[in-house]
Amino acid sequence: MRAEQIAYAIAGVVFGLIAGWIIGAQQTISRPPVAAAAEPSGASGNPTTRAAVLDESQVRALRSTAEREPRNAAPRAELGNLYFDAERYDDAIKWYEEAARLAPNDPNLSTDLGVSYYYTNRPDKALEQFAHSLSLDPRHAKTLLNVGIVKAFGKQDLQGAVQAWQQVIQLAPEAPEGRAARRALDSLRSAHPDLDGGRKPGA
Image (tube, rainbow, N blue to C red; front, side, top):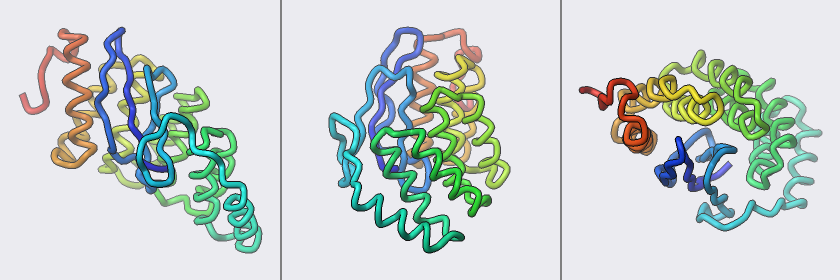
């Protein structure tokens, strides 16, 4: 998966708040299904107006490698990335799951899989996968950022989203994830002034 831009809405308020933040091993941006807009990236990482075209020759090469190397998670993760970029999320899940079985202690791969579950309208399964990621690395900011997104948009748990994004800010205040979480919180509290008492992190 590669860097992408996302814009999404809460309570009818559309805000573009994350551009180029990273979710996972391959600089992933998740795009909530309830998003107002989403712009997948091409191979260069620059935003485009449609999903990446699946490179069938690359898929064949990676499949061949995966067959020759049954214990190698890397070609399976790359196949997951290719299918995710092409918005073929069920296919992405198949390969991420295979990769995760071979590399069960990789929180980035686990989070990529969780994001893919979210895109197939399985927010509970996504959160379960993120919980596994956090059991491997409780300070994994990319995972926590995604937890907030899924709680806000998949579960309508705004307070849970606030808590997750506050953790991101505490862990990585100057990182892209921290800045994205801060913008998300500011926009959320603008739409819901009574949320969490309207307090900002550190207040």
